[in-house]
Length: 408
Ligand SMILES: Cc1cc2nc3c(=O)[nH]c(=O)nc-3n(C[C@H](O)[C@H](O)[C@H](O)COP(=O)(O)OP(=O)(O)OC[C@H]3O[C@@H](n4cnc5c(N)ncnc54)[C@H](O)[C@@H]3O)c2cc1C
Image (cartoon, rainbow, N blue to C red):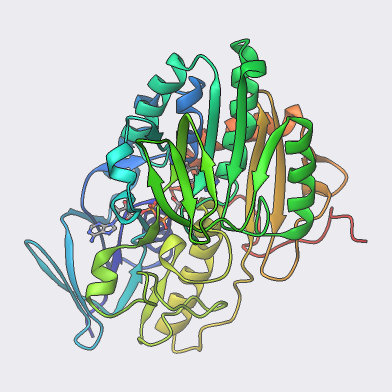
């Protein structure tokens, strides 16, 4: 029997899972991870770039450097996935596999939003990839007052807390520049609230009110009109802006759709608990590429990696994969420079107040903006590069822990 595992995508999920598999499997298992380039971006840091809190150059590192020796890293475009023949093709190579892990993430598609490209980098900006975040920084540097609208073009989108963090940081930034009184900030979202979970939404909405940030909900974007500077919804409602900050339409990678593996928008139908691809044997899915109903977040990819590795090991030993994953997600939510909140939840349990990760001791507080949480947000970056990507464990299970949470 050949012993080959192929991992598609060397971003957050693909790197963690490849390294974690290398740690667990003997050398007769060949592990190959494929990505189109050698640039690993620490995406949470993109939020800070427009506000000058972080320099974009520090967010990009060589993927190769973070992939363990013993994992075969291939830089190439994945062009075909054949789950019947158990084969993956790239522009220049062909790879047979015994197990496949799909970790191809999301594709940001501004060209899908009507009118957006005409306004792009003129009065419409984003911070969802490096070049865009740098352009937005220039715009904010020159901003002298006016209306900033943060819009989410469509669901799903990655990191559902990022737009809330953006408007909170915009409030802090404009105050620091002394032009908050000359400015308006509005979050315009297709969701029924500022976030996907009702209890946390109520808390974030209250904080937005205190910061004089308007929230407009259930706004499904139909068009960006950069000439007259407004966005229009499917229902015909218009919101005017001076500077638009947008999370463009997001889908899964095109190779997933082209090979018929997707749910219609590029994400792979995935078992919510085992993380197996629903229609394909020996295929697992991790991170943003799945269609599981939890946040598209790095923390989720990290928790999922443990489950995928466990279940591949189970299959190798002839045991049925277990239904372990519970949708666990953990996210800091920045309120201003120096203060952050934190949420920890899963498919069934909404974010609750309490302490994290240790009951009574924290040191982080759930659903509460604190300085310690801000340090947690900053400290996450070295942890990401040096510990998490390497597939090392923090002694935490991948599933939600109730100890430390205040119920009722
Ligand atoms: C502004 C912003 C802020 C964020 N903040 C947070 C946060 O605070 N906390 C948090 O947990 N998460 C956050 N996230 C989300 C987090 O970064 C992503 O959810 C996470 O990186 C997903 O990991 P992934 O492995 O699924 O996808 P990615 O890390 O995006 O990796 C996918 C990889 O697949 C490769 N790929 C895709 N298709 C092909 C192909 N055809 N051929 C070759 N290679 C291919 C891509 O090049 C890419 O490297 C944030 C994201 C953004 C944009």
